Image 1 (cartoon, rainbow, N blue to C red):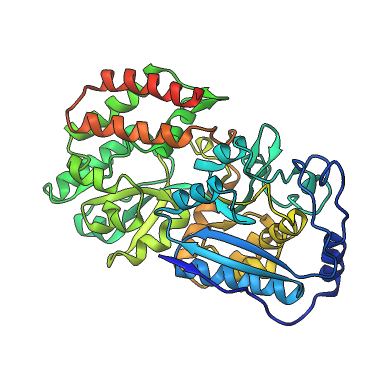
Image 2 (cartoon, rainbow, N blue to C red):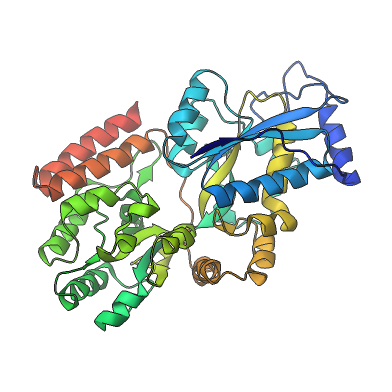
Length: 443
């Protein structure tokens, strides 16, 4: 789905914020360009003229409606600023963004996730927001420190968390009740999870497999590695060796031998992460792996009651992860206005109530508390409850993935599929992955 909207504007004024925007728009063009530490971007000297910012994000209709309401609220309080918005589904989003980047026509403000943050930052596409954070124009004081750190590349702030999410196991509660099998629990060991999944398969007499096979899922591997005290990345290199990856692949070979996971063709179909294709909603498994903020959407695809728990392994393997970020284009003519809009979208309680948990839990703990207290959607309440259960026990945030992460993810999926299909053994697939992944990161 793709949609382009005309400029968003609504009459009204917030005197304090209008004075701020007047000051921002009146900053002269400096010979050295912009704020110190902000990557050399400068504000266009148009104190009396209108400003139109282009904004681009991915998501469904609900996200679009909520985001447009938030932007209208900004325009109501800052009438000289309007927005040209474009949104679409996640499929093809980054291809479109790459085309825009290639033509130097990147939106002023856009949504990005950790799979591409490092890549776009290191290619010089993203606006360095650090100067605006240091100067107080973007207030990150109410965000968990790990969530702030997870937006930094080489100690520069390139992404501001739009919301926070956690890796979760989403399971079919009604199915488990019918089968008489206990529900999985947060932080059960991986071995216990495998045993639970095999028990589900046996209880259903093979009609339903216990679990999705996440052997090609970088998110699951990352948490597995952190549970072992190992990193996924160490700078621009893999942070783990072949022995750890071989153990991972062999673990899921055991799962397949115990029929805890479904046929390879079914797993391949769900590997892309599209909620509509997840096996827990298609009825092929009792559980799938997802991001917690995807839970309400998954429930909409299932007639049975779903529930969610944290991933297997220690809770400290999780971290304060941005579900996605707001990022600015380095070439924008209005970087300080972009920074002000980002601060508004992430730090306003009123905006937080408009956006709800569509992108995940609000990044600001102050906004989060206000939003959670007023939730009346039981699905959103479950997402919030998991976030609260994990909040005080997560581990330190790693650096965001480096450039080349997208290719590493694709190589991991390819290796896992090759093993599942019997085209290669786990050891050969591991050796090939390690060499190709290191090469991708070195480019």
